[in-house]
View (cartoon, rainbow, N blue to C red):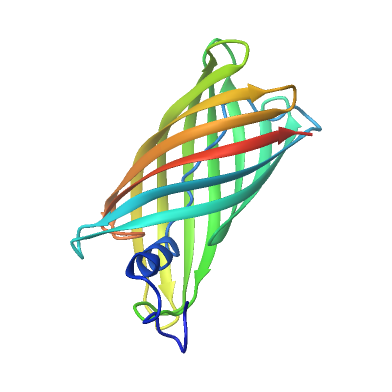
Length: 216
């Protein structure tokens, strides 16, 4: 519980999770390289947990996020979507560039979030841009596998003035399991490391999550 602008009544692990997570980009993918069919919708809910390591502060903290997403097919090889997650909003696309045994797609995204003032940080605006490169293939009639690299850039602008920047690279691995005719379960793991600057941290992070997707 936050009272009077302080966190003194909150457990230490909860303070770390909320404060750290408030400045983190969403790096989840939860889809294969095959876009949503033209004129159709996919909607999903997902949750993930993980951790983030800050080398500058010599500290580690847990992270967690919930998300609600919707995607619509707009062309044979393209869909667009929006994702509302715990701390921000993301817009993205899936552009399939190769269709075959292994399908390949670019998945660019832009996101924005605003964090509230806390006992350790001011109110601030975060802007993120990034992309995943998705390679996926069927393993069976109901199972697909997807994997690939991710890269991104972030900017931090506190209300007190000044800016900070950062760039990261990483990767992900997912399994897509069809459940019935119109729903899928998608477990996924991911990791990234900041290679320039210090946004979201001077360090890296990992995550593991599960999405449940419906075809409309």
